[in-house]
Length: 311
Image 1 (cartoon, helix red, strand yellow):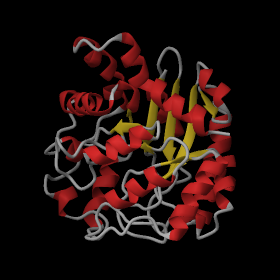
Image 2 (tube, one colour):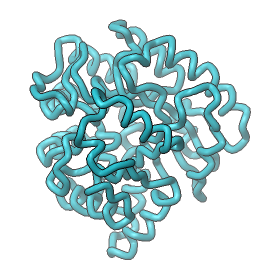
Image 3 (cartoon, one colour):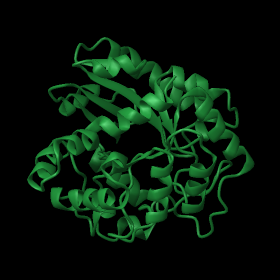
């Protein structure tokens, strides 16, 4: 199966959910769709959005709304959700269970900048997880939601590795040793994630792969590096593709406090589309990857994490 750990539809009730059919692959696919990231995306924003999306997904024969692990064996595209910020909890850890029941399967503590849970990757100083942030990771473990270190500061992300008792992930991050961008992760972070049994999801954003280079070659270079560093059993795919890329680029330009020069210096951001993600299989095979490693990277590794975490 193909496992897309993070992509982005427009965060509106009018979003065209049918676009997710672009991930269709023989053997089925799992697609995690973002349901909130900004500090302004609070509890009501996320629940209202999912109140519209969930019944439309359930009513479409092409898709299946995520429930338990058995849903992943469907020939349909199984759709789950992720939150790139713990802000929708609004300080109430009981809402982790609420969001899990709505289909949210991964959550990261902080999006780019520090909040009540921990530090972001764009903070000048990252003091790590707060006491509340540590309680959040423990609650994620208890409920079955996967803890995610992407967008977090390095110290905060390493703290996730220390606190979690279940596999963590970097849902959509590239390797800083190949391209020095603050959104990319260090070798230390990748090794600590792997030590939990987790997975690094290489992402297809041009500015994280190189100087705004969203080519297949750039994507696979980061896969190669991660595989060499932590082994093929700890690497996966997560494009971070935005189906409204033009609007995203406009938002980046309009909100410099969220997206500083590291995000804007090369002009409009380029993205790896679903079709590019599907092409990774052939690229890995042409590089001589064995079939079991290809299967693991395409989806088996993230499925293993789900089996270890979901309840």
